[in-house]
Amino acid sequence: MIAKNQKVDRFYIPDTLANWPWPRHLNPAYKEQKALSSAWLRSFNAFDEKSQKAFDLCDFNLLASLAFPLADPSRLRSGCDLMNCFFIFDEYSDVADPDVVRKQADIIMDAIRNPHKPRPKGEFIGGEAHRQFWELASKGATPTAQRRFVDTYQQYVDAVVQQAIDRANDHIRDVEGYFRVRRDTIGAKPSFTLLEFTMDIPDEVMNHPIIQDLTIWCIDMLIIGNDICSYNVEQAHGDDLHNLVTIVMNQYDLDLPGAMKWIGEFHDGIAEKFLNTYKNLPDWGPVINPQIQRYVDGLGNWVRGNDSWSFESWRYFRGKGPEIEKIRWVELMPREEATITPNGYGSSTMALIKFAVGMIPAYGLYMIAQRFVY
Image 1 (spheres, rainbow, N blue to C red):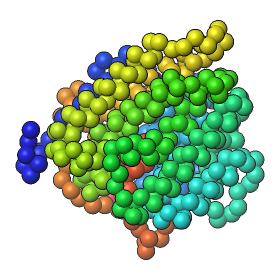
Image 2 (cartoon, helix red, strand yellow; image 1 turned 90 degrees about the vertical axis):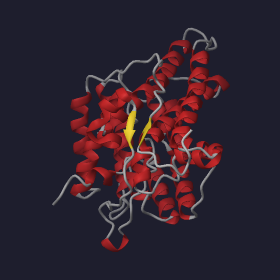
Image 3 (cartoon, helix red, strand yellow; image 1 turned 90 degrees about the horizontal axis):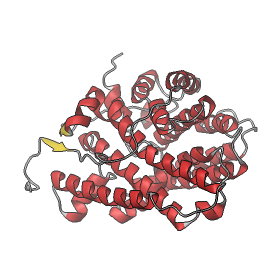
Image 4 (cartoon, one colour; image 1 turned 135 degrees about the vertical axis):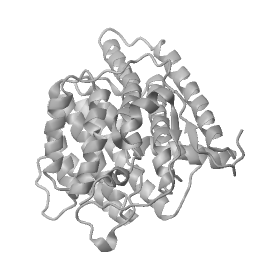
């Protein structure tokens, strides 16, 4: 083990999915729906041009297309739009105090609960974006799936508010507390409801301990995958206190390689539980069984899709992702600073963008934005 005060020039990212049975699968409608959803997002003029260019390099539409490879074009469009809605709320909330974030969250939920009601002029742009998203996405979704989406989105926005409170108070959680909050701020629960938009799975089945365990284990693997990939850029900007890698280092007195090893083994344990449980699902009869199988397969694919996107997008590794995915070694970036703001924030309120960003935490658009010079 390297002494904690010894300089580390590079580190190894654990190959957490080396034996994961779900292969990479890209939705064939990716390019078409990416173009539509990207144009839709740009119509809000939510970000300055430099930020928008950085956002485009992140390609959250690719994430949706890897996460929902079997979705028809209209459902994939909903997935792409949802990723963009996460981004809008995350970027605006990350530079706001808790009271403002609470207001933003309430606006979003009012828009989702009233998708046919026009939004007030001058309101936080996230309200209209979510209204348009849900007005389109809810079409064709079963009432059960719609209700679950609204319920889980409420959990998501409430968790983002709590995250803002933690940030304002410089509150750093331990591993258990971090997972407890992060399971909601990552936005996975409402994303998973898109898997069941054409299904009608009863509450007693979705709330069954086995299905709940599988869902939580999937979310935890997404959290781990995001944090080990995002750590480098976060530490470079001194914004790694809410990253699992830093939390593990501090809580267990480990160096960076030791923390990565600990996290890799922790992930292996979760993956083993998921796969063993997946092979022994309860029997709910001929109507429910196929739906649950599709849902759980969707969870397994989400883990693969998120991992593939992490290396294929510029969000974490710029253009080196495919190479790093193979060799797993990453050069530790030097610490530096940059600023970027959403439209609507004046220069007097310009703040360093934080990295805790919902379903897709942590590349910091500003890392990519530095590539663009006016």
